[in-house]
Image 1 (cartoon, rainbow, N blue to C red):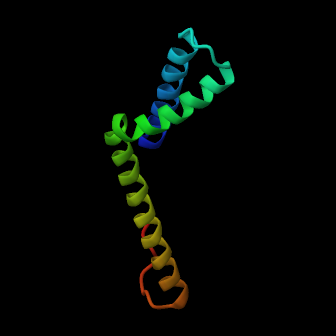
Image 2 (cartoon, rainbow, N blue to C red; image 1 turned 180 degrees about the horizontal axis):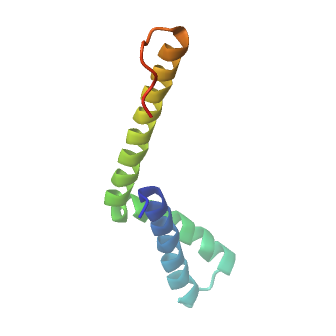
Amino acid sequence: MNPVAKYTLGRLGLFVVVAALLLVLPLPIDPLLKVGVAMLVAFGLQFVVLRKWRAEMINQVDVSMADRRERKQRLRAALAGEESEPPAE
């Protein structure tokens, strides 16, 4: 599975779990406030719980950006006439 999608779904799932727990608890506060608190708690927990998935996502983004930079440099070199062979796909 794509690491970006996995991390995003993990964050969403973490929020849903925390929100469900807070909404089920019989606390005397507004449900909208419970959802807001759930957002804050899930945001904090994701740094600890989803650390491995976040590292995988960051690695994938870094690799794809490096590949994009390399292709861009090859294209610029080819357009400038500095390269004698056509850019590899």
